[in-house]
Length: 225
Image 1 (cartoon, rainbow, N blue to C red):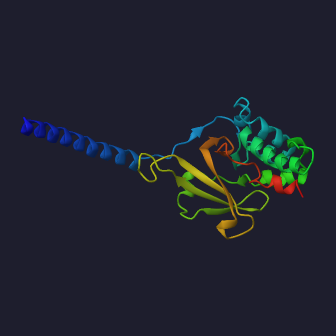
Image 2 (cartoon, rainbow, N blue to C red; image 1 turned 90 degrees about the vertical axis):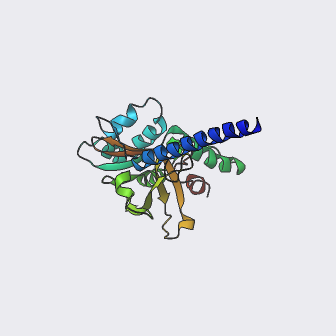
Image 3 (cartoon, rainbow, N blue to C red; image 1 turned 135 degrees about the vertical axis):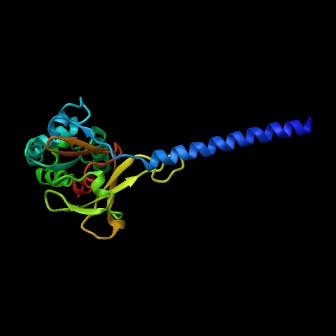
């Protein structure tokens, strides 16, 4: 009886081991064949943002106040890479800024209250002339320093997250970093994308994660001096 149980256990163990090996092979093949996919949108980048319900309402409000970027997103002859932000990115920035203002007995400010020069500067840092997608950026292991439309150095770095214990087997991301005019990464502020490679008629859109703070947390400092 004991010998029979041992044989049953050994047989079960071999089946599990074999299944694990097959599963690993399948998993490895899946990730080895991982393709860089695009979402195609038959319209301009601005039209895409406008077509997504209320998701980008705050961004569209900002773009109304920053016509230079809005015009590029609308221009069918332009080729612009833009990092879009959902409403939560602006909520994060305003909450942080107004939290400091409240502590100093100051009235809250909103997007329409941000001084024009500050709003222009912060928004420009999300826009880049030319097309920068994941196939291009993956060639730069340490990331690529690219100048935004206002000639400000930003870093774009390709990354693939881990999944199912396989390093580099998960979601594609671009890490967008405000270099703060420094070559030392300890001074950089970075944010990851949640969506990449939305190809439109006039450019490339990437969407930053909802945790992103518009302006890379600078609003709280700039408007609380």
